[in-house]
Each structure stands twice: as structure tokens, then as C-alpha cells.
Image 1 (tube, rainbow, N blue to C red):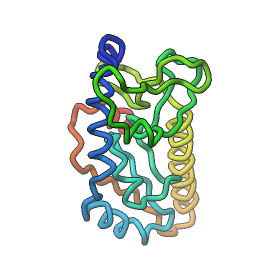
Image 2: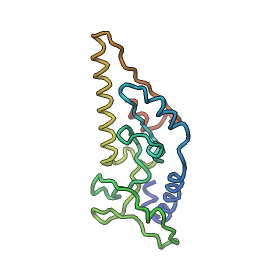
Image 3: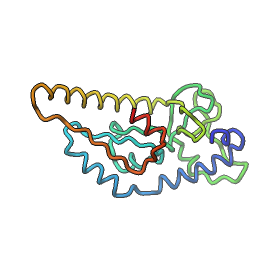
Image 4: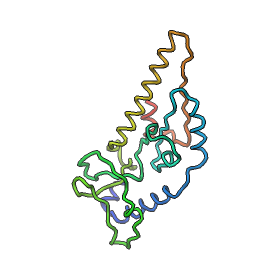
Length: 184
């Protein structure tokens, strides 16, 4: 939780960085390639909407312009105090650091110099602070949906084939806040 990053930042970062290394070192499974193959014939292309922040969609080669990571991305940081909505990549020297307890250099915000945090929605955050990356992804998704509905509406009176919107829900819990946002 964000409270953990405030109360025990070194322990929280040790835990977080361990999982970031696991995410980075894990190869995406074949399901990502299968989704891409299913999407290729679509006239308007496809969009991946993910509530996971592990970065596997991006690692699998899915186009960044066609990706909405609803809960953020583990390998990005933002300002803890919220001095801006900017995000930046987690520096390699912090990710690869092997510091002993009490000696870890904690990430800081390049804008205000204060503490940085993972640019993801934590369990205790509703809603998450939107980052510039997420805002861009959401705008791209909305543009894609608008294009889809425009093409569909134009096909209606002419009798032309209307494009179909196909949604594959893979491993998302029914109570997911991110999924409910997309459903709306």
C-alpha cells in the first residue's frame, strides 16, 4: 500500500523492486501472441486493455499506441507528493541496485526532489492519480472507440457490413475497478 511506502520506504522498495525484476525477467506467455494473431485481421486493429501492471503486454510486442494499462505500469515512477502527473522510467541503477538494508538509494522526483513512488494504482487508492502516460493511453483508447462507432454508424444506412467489437476477457476478476471503468 502507499502507507507502507511512507512508513517503511526501504522495506517497501525492496519488496517492489524484487517484483519488478521478476516482471522484467519473465517472458510473456503464448497467449499474448495468440491475442495479437486474433487481432491482426480486424479492419480497425485492436486495443489491449489490461488491469495488470506487470508490463507483459508491452513486453510481448503489443503496440504502445494500442495499449491501455488501467492500473499503471510497474516500471514507471511518479512523484509521491503529486507535484505533477509526469511519469518516468524506473532507473536501471535502482532496479539493479544490491544495497544492504539502510543503504539503498531511494528514487526521487526529478521535478521537486521529493520521494518517488511506483506509478501504479495500489490497493488502497481509489481512484489512482492519473499519470500523463495513462491519460495518453486513455485518450488513444477513446479515439479508437470513437473511430469504431463512427465506422459502424456510417455502415448502418448503406447496408455495408458493420465492424464487430469483440472483447476477450482473460483472467480479470469481476470486481476489478479497472475492468468496471472500461465496461462503463
